[in-house]
Length: 115
Image (cartoon, helix red, strand yellow):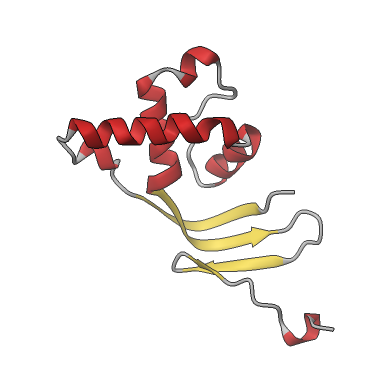
């Protein structure tokens, strides 16, 4: 099961392509999003995006959307420009919590958790 996100602080950077007048860079970003799309677990991505305040993704991806450059740019933005700065990741199976501080997840076991 994917970890659940509790965000107390997020950072949303400007889309890379917004500051780039380089058409080749924009095409690389679109190609990246198009190539990674088939490997994404869409419901999990939606859940994570919503937990971080991003409500812009559609509930499902149609073949038309998968070919739409505007959608692919928006997907790239969510994947690459939205960052969990502070918060908690929680395992839904065990309830174990992993704090996130300054964008770094602490996954170290406590001494009491070691056998």
